[in-house]
Length: 144
Image 1: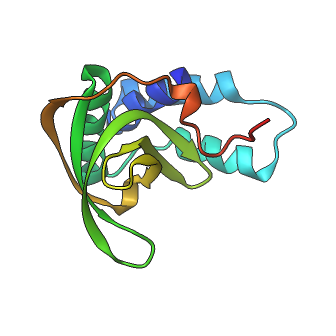
Image 2 (image 1 turned 60 degrees about the horizontal axis):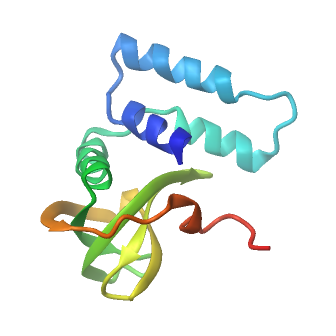
């Protein structure tokens, strides 16, 4: 969660010299000799700048996570179905080629991961979100 927060902060900084240097430092910090394809792809996504419109949405999401505020998403799923959802954001993460917002979806009444590139719009509702521990909301980890 801490690395994802750092990377999310870097991701919406743009392509300026400080952001480029910070991404290079993050890449060096996370670099290892033995890396599988999933880790390599995830690291590349983690250290690449977001496009401008996605970066704008990322800033709203990052602020909502920090402030424990509910966000309203206009979200298009894989089948191109668009829904409006209120989400209590918990964390952001990268898996392979995509950034995800992970949170409690009030519509589905459960934990969901929302791909950034499918979030069509996002706004803070101003409503307080219940603080939740990020380690309980990581959808790509194995459960024991």
